[in-house]
Length: 236
Image (cartoon, rainbow, N blue to C red; front, side):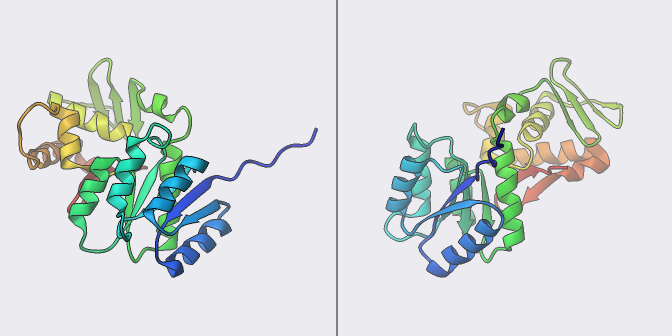
């Protein structure tokens, strides 16, 4: 019996700078991806809906229809709402990064970017979106390095030593562990911890994160601060 080669993962690049497009296409093709390209937001939306790529690289600074609007429309359409999106951003666009993540982007990479870092981010996002990963992320028992979390028993331990966490700290840790590697804004984390209908300031999440890091001790460093955006849990 002839074994079929594994299907290539497909990446749609929505970028208006031709030199960046060519660099991205060369590096991604060399690493085994099937690369499609669109030079405007409008063409990108058409390509995404018609071909359903495994992942989209989306430049924020597009002419006419910018990347934020493209992201909003992708997430608003049933056919494209689940496609992972990594934003390509220029320096000094922290507000746009926060808005992009809030709209549903999975990650972002600032320009100028390292091809090695970008490839690592792409692989991490694809891993998180593999079939069955969502169910695995919702498992009642989570382990990350020395951290062990049992949601059913509401217990957390580090190196076998039990910790005493508040409800908010427990929910914050569980949310980050379930979605390790993904960047969350402060507002997204507050919604996950206290809910969208409770009025608190975004900076309150910094207090929760600080307290959680102290209780986790040395492994608290796995909670990474993403400057100007929020937090993510390191993938160990």
